[in-house]
Image (cartoon, rainbow over all chains, first blue to last red; front, top):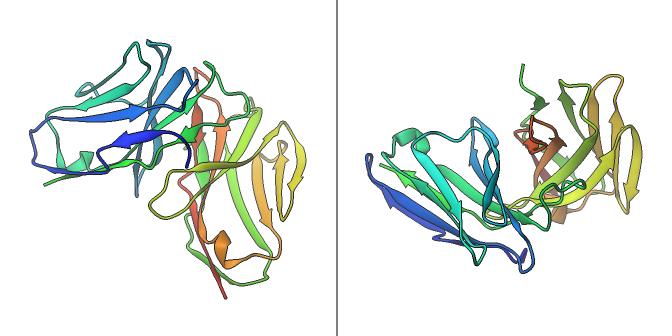
Length: 115
Length: 111
């Protein structure tokens, strides 16, 4: 158990809808990262928050947004969903802004299916 | 050209075999290299990391980086069925130092 909690584990929705994925980082970790994993693209970095502030942005679509709250939990909002958004969404956490050892602690993911 | 390339496999070996997993990367400025292991229906977990060139050993696992050829390798000795998983290489790069992952190689070790 990594200590990172993600909800929901599975989500099925329709095109055009909006969903929210939630992540609670490990106790003491200030950074939260969101990744998208699909068969064709692999694990793609979306966005990172550190202590409530956006720190780094990757290949995140404009239809997606995220935030980190004062209690350090984070939410990833996906709107105007398309079939191609079906994927596993992972949250990861680390202690500092930059993990020089590359050690991120991943949750078990939220599997999103868009029909 | 993708920043990190990894053969997705799948790779199937008998128990006890030596496994070699490989990645190539495009940017010679990358300095930090990692291997993550991902079991089915789980999130990735860090297996090993290395800084710059050279070898690093941890039990049955050896990570190797050849910066001259931009090649990253993971060797597993005496492979076990419990090693069956997807192995992802990663580099710390990008404009903001985020991790860039390969697509992963699915390994199956048969008893």
